Amino acid sequence: MKKFNITVPVIMKTEDELNEQERRLLAEAKEATFRSYSPYSHFSVGAAVMLEDGTIVPGSNQENCAYPSGLCAERTALFFANSRYPDQAVTILCCVARDTSGNFTLRPIPPCGGCRQVMVETEERFGRPMQVMLYGTDGIYFIPSARDLMPVNFDSSYLE
Ligand code: THU
Image (cartoon, rainbow, N blue to C red):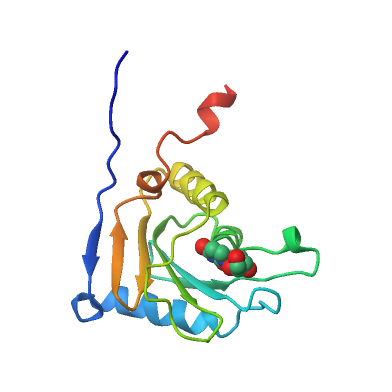
């Protein structure tokens, strides 16, 4: 028997420590929460992805009365970015949420498993890592790549 641990490298920054690019991305993700359509959960999520040429594409969660038909903010942003700019790699994804009282969450907001799977495939598709920036008012987590958030993941190589 062998045992091994998988560790996730995380850098935590305060808002003051963000560089100009990260600040712009965060501002777009925050703004996107105000375009969330979340009449069922009242949980407004905003995401923004930065492309390699510096273009920022925002997205927000879009719910539906048939619950599974809705989509998370991260996938809304990623799918739109990949359909509008199919040749541009995604370099950073930022995710932000406002809770049912309308306040930004204290804890950094983590993407769900389905979004992580899509993020990993986006990395694979463009052959480069996507940095993940998770915002909370208590601190902002930076994870170097989506794969770090989803180790032992299923990918297209298993289909071969
Ligand atoms: N949601 C996101 O948009 N992103 C996440 O990372 C977690 C959850 C959405 C889905 C649903 O509209 C609402 O938040 C409550 O789960």
